[in-house]
Image (cartoon, rainbow, N blue to C red; front, side):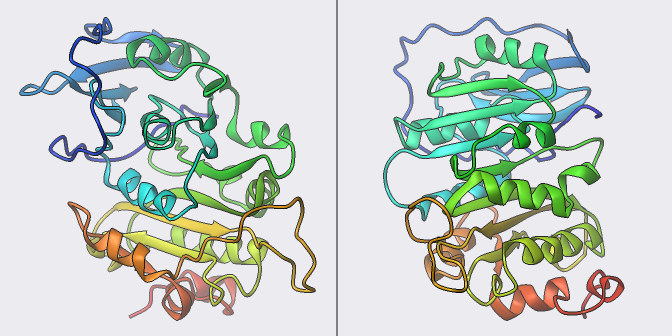
Length: 317
């Protein structure tokens, strides 16, 4: 598989969480490109605030971090994912990150929910080794790192192992096909506890064929009632949803807490997250870059659910 990378525009003025004490020893960062298994990695400090850095993998911005503030998230789509996570019950989480890179979101989760257990998967073993030292990441078992293909890693996990599965994997400017198909969705659903949520970063361009098609796939795997039951959603900046430019669409799907017959759908777990909760829509609207949430009838229309495959990827008016 080609090198996995994240797409996003850093916004270093955005801050969240509490900061580390100023006395913390600063890590030694590389100057210039460093060879990794899939090419090169570069850590670029912000010209005005050197504690803010962006990790570039093969020239692509892949993670943005504040070395003094582990709660900081710069990329807008990660801030959107954090809004979903904030709706989950208080306490530690079990989170799987497919496409780890610099582990910005994993740092945020550990900071906001101490005691969480997380697994970061990235195809580049050397990169994972380097970011451990560069970014002072939480140690195992708080954050375990594994070099593997994301799709293969999913097949090795125990069912119901995670509260959250995050997919943030790219080859070039799009998600590899094998990480956006029915097989991936089924494997992710299996890895989630009942009521757990899949958050998938889908970078797409007008008319958003990829995002629409993947929502149809997720609906087929997570349940035909997922959209109207508040278990299927899409979120992005309004300009992206309106098909005006290339950008990130965060797709969310929740594993049912019970099956249609009323039986427990797997091991005991907390109740399913309601993606139609007005609090989520408000949180997304009030981000530094406001985002719009599609649920219920809106996500049905957007994805073309219930139409043929060809109709489902035709842009709506």
